[in-house]
Image 1 (cartoon, rainbow, N blue to C red):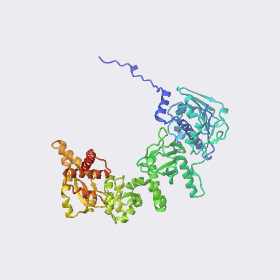
Image 2: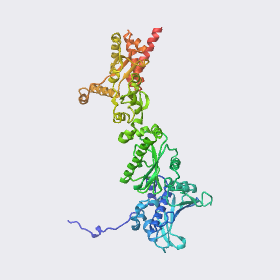
Image 3: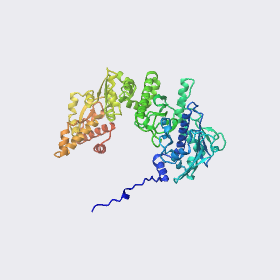
Image 4: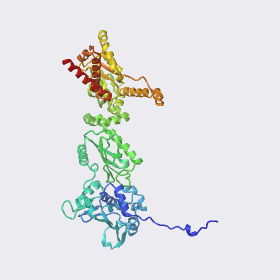
Length: 618
């Protein structure tokens, strides 16, 4: 039986979403805006955009012909501007429709880049601190337009009515909030003034504040009395530099090591980078203070500079950077990427200028921020060639620059780890070897590039064979006399894959040297695992990968009185114990992490030697 189709089944009805305004405000407060304090930034931003639109009607007028006036007395917060204003039709179109912005009006859309905001939800932020928003506006586009009043409430209702011209004699807009009782933290007069200073100190339009008391900090007090410091004129370059440094100290709370002026005309960006006076951990990125068209966008904008530039903090004001929906960070796009690259180039240029003309400043900078420069030099050939000779490294001659080190060592040896350097530093220094600690981040890679700027110098990795070759052998008679002890020592230390040899080296106070690299220990561990898994799948795999595992070397120093006594020990057990004790002491001196078996050996050998001494005394 065929189905019957009722035409009514296909009828559709257009409906609109029912918006829960309270739920939307809660969403904004918890997921879009970082704090209720942004309500004042949004009101200032709307006022600035209205002034920008007003100027487009009379572009010949001075920039400060119109302004913004704030009022807060504890009972209300009011923001008044001399901007373009709204007609009654504009109010119905833009204030009564969530998500639509007057900045999308046809006559304004063409000049959209002149506006700070890009999203029509800013006014909703006022519901974070108030249950009602009262707007009175008069349009500058229609000379005889009446004033219009709009009242929006947190429950989603609103009213619109026209008012006589006397209610608003001049074009512009006034927004008035009656704060909720729980919003006092953000709407007290002192807090409103502080927030206005915080967000609007660099705005181009004059902003004043009135707290209703008529006192010096109230009636007509300027919020942004001075232009941005880089926009001011100064009598001398030195005076300008001091003024910029003073501003950096005011903003960031530290006296900059130096200030770098930033100017990117293509995107309308100006500002300064303040060089930190103290070192910071590698990779720790500082937030930067970013203004867009004078309005503070973020104090923690990490994305404005590359990762390696963690030695500066910036404050900038830009025209062409795009804010995100919350207007608290920057939108990642091609413009931001280009700005990041251009600012990085400005920092490189500052380093180059310091290297060429101010060695004292360069020295102070490198003393504090050498790690940052090393991270840059690894990827920047120009910086590497310019600064590598000046960078400090840990060497067998103490902390020195590579330029100083290369003057006395035509062959430079570099270790692969910090522990390896600590194992060999004293002995290598006494033997006249030039060794650099390559265990720190970037150091080994940079030292290997030294011949690119010092062709007369050769660089090689330090290996145990190289160091052993520079230790003097003992004579044949001494070697034969110690043969029995060396055999017992090798047997005692076989569990650690450690060979034992007798040499002479300085300093004589060092009884033994343990040569055992991290790579060698790793290879022995892998070989041991292969042996344990022999016959299984892992045994086949690891066996195919296995190489001849390099052995550790315990080099005993014949110049040391304790070693000369030890090699004459005739008791097998005491000889083994003394060899274990010498190994343990050498392992501890290397300052590498001890394996459990080594810790156990150190404890056991100490107790055995103590017991032997007590038995002998008794």
